[in-house]
Length: 80
Image 1 (tube, one colour):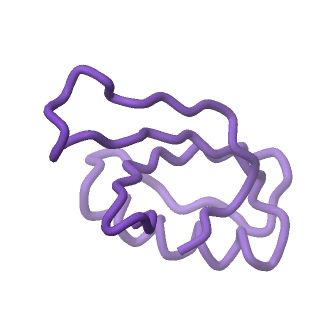
Image 2 (cartoon, rainbow, N blue to C red):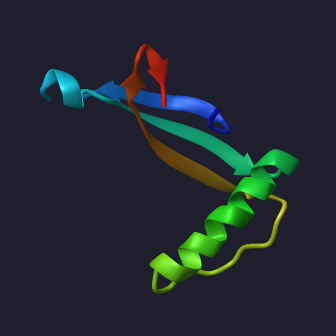
């Protein structure tokens, strides 16, 4: 899996035990490219179920800035 957008921030959890260490990454993108539009459409479905006041947005739209948070874990030297 390759996240959409530009890496904005990355932080490793150094205080966790060795087996639980992970890295958190924040990516930024706008919802105006075909790849981003498809991804946001999938996210919107989740938003409608999980956020009480969540609403659909018109796509594609470059005025929407999307930040996504990923918890990256390494398994056998490979990121997952």
